Image (cartoon, rainbow, N blue to C red):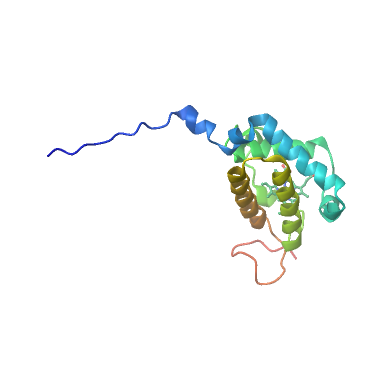
Length: 155
Ligand code: HEM
């Protein structure tokens, strides 16, 4: 008896693109909205005062850089690299002492942003996980033995 081979059509490139977090968020407009909400909260909410104080400027440039970075990070156009080269995100954060508190403050601001802006619960969960991993990776301050291996420690 001959075997039946079922060929499932591969999804087209455009379908794959449409499934990126970037597209699911609503493309450029959605990513801009997320970034603006994040920095609005950071600037306005008293509980983010410490986080706000770490930021040297509160300019449109700061918002723009996060927007350009997230565009590529979420699967859309890699705008940050086109303008500034490789992100080297961890290295670019070395001037700021980031420990557990700073990571948690940043995440709290992002989690509130996701809750306010992202309506799809599955997408919200996925973004939460991705941001949490990246924020944890950004820690560079010696605190205790909870640093991930290979972290550069700044006194
Ligand atoms: C873990 C806690 C974090 C803290 C405390 C923190 C803090 C900062 C500060 C103080 C700046 C400088 C902003 C300015 O020049 O006004 C910055 C820049 C930036 N941050 Fe973070 N950040 C954190 C995590 C993250 C994460 C998780 C991402 C991305 C998912 C991110 C993306 C960026 C980008 C793209 C820039 C601009 C870099 C440049 O080109 O200069 N940050 N961050």
